[in-house]
Amino acid sequence: MPYGLYIAAEGAQAQAQRVEVIANNIANVDTAGFKRDLAVLQARYAQAIENGTDYPNSGSINDVGGGVYVSEKVTDYSRGSLKGTNIPTDLAIAGEGFFQIEIDGEKYLTRAGDFTFTAEGDLVTSAGNPVLDTDGVPVQVDPEALAGHIGNYFDENGFVTVGGDVIPLAMVKPASLSDLAKYGDNAFFPLAAVEPLTLEERQTRPGFLEKSGVNSITEMMTMIEAQRAYEANVNLIQNHDEMLGNLVNRVLRQG
Image 1 (cartoon, rainbow, N blue to C red):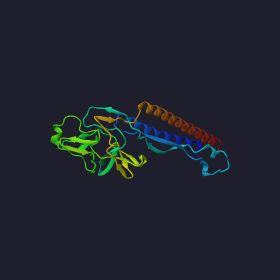
Image 2 (image 1 turned 135 degrees about the vertical axis):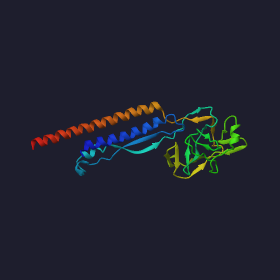
Image 3 (image 1 turned 135 degrees about the horizontal axis):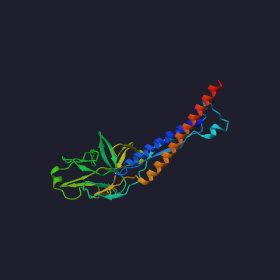
Image 4 (image 1 turned 60 degrees about the vertical axis):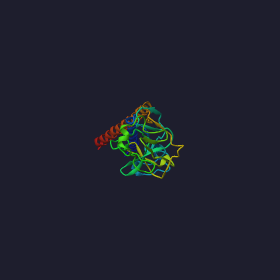
């Protein structure tokens, strides 16, 4: 593949991946506790591409560089601002840490506290996943107590307070945020052991939610930039294609 065409194709692919990440951020601008992702672009080391030949001393192709690619996708764990909802089953984490939930029998973490109680008294996430207590057991309260309850269902330390039940929600933190892998359902899978928050660290706001970490204006501006970069690379590909076509036709006519 001609070197210029290779560079343009690599650039178009990288920008397409970037657009996909940004689009997912925008789609979750109103998702409670959502953490935005960023596609990290990195320049390839200079490589001699044409004909598979290395030119270590040519000072030409090797100096051009090898275009860009998406080296990794990282998550921005910055805390979102809190908003009051006046919904008694909503709970926001005001400090560090995550709620612990269960998905397919495994323990996951989330910052989204838009919980609900089922008719059976089970506390679940908006996706229907069980919320765990400090014993690692799904939280369940007396359904009859729910019917007669007035006010918030939680206190400011992340305890469920319904009827005579006082149940501490599992609230934990990883040793490093890099130990988390993003998963669907607005959750994260811990790749290493997590530790429980102390009582002093358990800071929650009943009747509040943490807003999405996505700034719609910033994401739209970044989207426009990525789309323009993608279109520029596609135009380069088309130009190279036309040049190659003209070259082939010229050779055929001369032959």
